[in-house]
Image 1 (cartoon, helix red, strand yellow):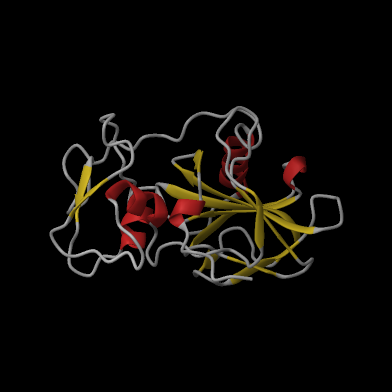
Image 2 (tube, one colour):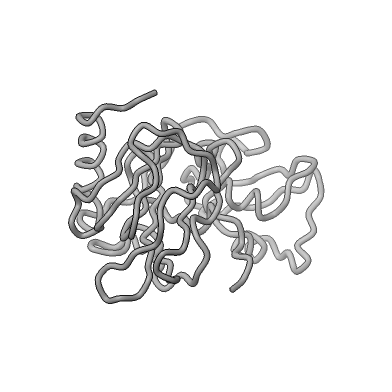
Length: 227
């Protein structure tokens, strides 16, 4: 569905209120946990075909943290029916997240993460990934482009893609934008090229937002393939 300039501007304005500015804690979803998760979200019961990495991503953490918490060593073998403790299980907080977009999440580009997510006031609301000027930036998941422009000066050329009613992703410091507002994109589709925040080095600022609130993308993404 095409999204008009007014709607796109509203999305951009909402993003501007928190990009690099106010820092609230990521919203805690109130939806019931998916199958295999205990009602208090303290324990996950392994289902057939699940991997430790997939379970970790589903609960907003990483496989190493989950393995450490449950005393699981490499090669991180798990089995159906096994109960896994989840981070924060003693605090009674919901650990689950809404379902990821169809196909899950993928890295938007190759390169080294030079600055991670920091939820402190004024901290980094995503990942800063260093690479080469002009290298492809790809959609992290399928969705619709809801903003393409440079109205937020501190992020230069910026793309915002809406994936589901819960999730959107943002791509900043772009050299070139290759998709228009309203365009449907598929996961892995080239949507832009890497630019620079001004110091000459190639850098992508990448965010995932849950209901408008920035969350750490790293636990949602697959393990880096190297390089």
